[in-house]
Image 1: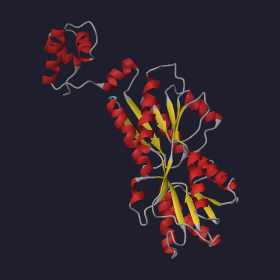
Image 2 (image 1 turned 135 degrees about the horizontal axis):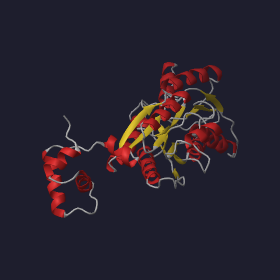
Image 3 (image 1 turned 120 degrees about the horizontal axis):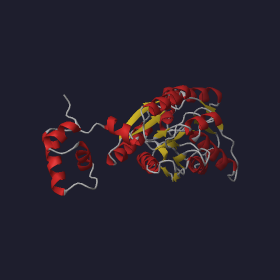
Image 4 (image 1 turned 180 degrees about the vertical axis):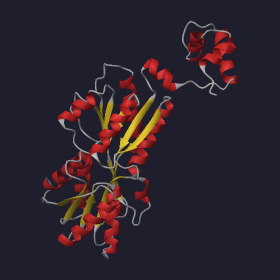
Length: 336
């Protein structure tokens, strides 16, 4: 049977409250008594019951990360940063996949509330309605939205500068001489991807010779990139450059172009967004917009922990990370 705090108290010859204070490093326990209790607890292989402790303190020492699809290397790196930060603070991190399903996402949040998590980092799959904001706010735990804006008085947010990243992609392709340009992106009103598209379109509209890119919406994954590229080639076979809204979509674009006999970058230049590790080893290596994935996950957990420590006084925090272009081999100067 599991060793309890009562067993430690009996073996130590002191009461349960003294054992509790000794184990938690609280004041009011003589140094000799503390050392004695710790030695007994170690000999008995005592492990504190976090569930029972959470019932008393109202804290579970657990956080949750809800992402759309952990198969996307972007989220794997975000999760790594979040997990490392949680571990360093002696917190557990629960991972959930929403599968781009808003209903599934909300169901997970409700379940996590029942498990008394101390905070949630959420990659929201859709714009939150006023009712959803009120519902999430009513749960009473800090929430940090990943890569999505929120009402300034509702939730904390953390993201890369997606608008600036989209603008970098547009400026880069325009300077290479491309004028038949397409942007393949995720679902409409997708927060971070919408910002990327806006920055991209604006940069091309403000160019010395304005360009109006073709924009196609689809799934934000490998297969979505394949399907959108196939559609683009059928509708606009003269396209010379493609900006994919994520590296995973860009990998799908590369696959579709290769299957269609199009050379990269000689026939079509491709640029992605995220700079996941795979982008450096695909053929050709992918030019992309870098965002600090690990640091985003790490910083999000740090914000959650600060907010959790403030109890009801939870003024939201907002943090924006810079981005930069990583030039590799998938784009080439175009001369008409």
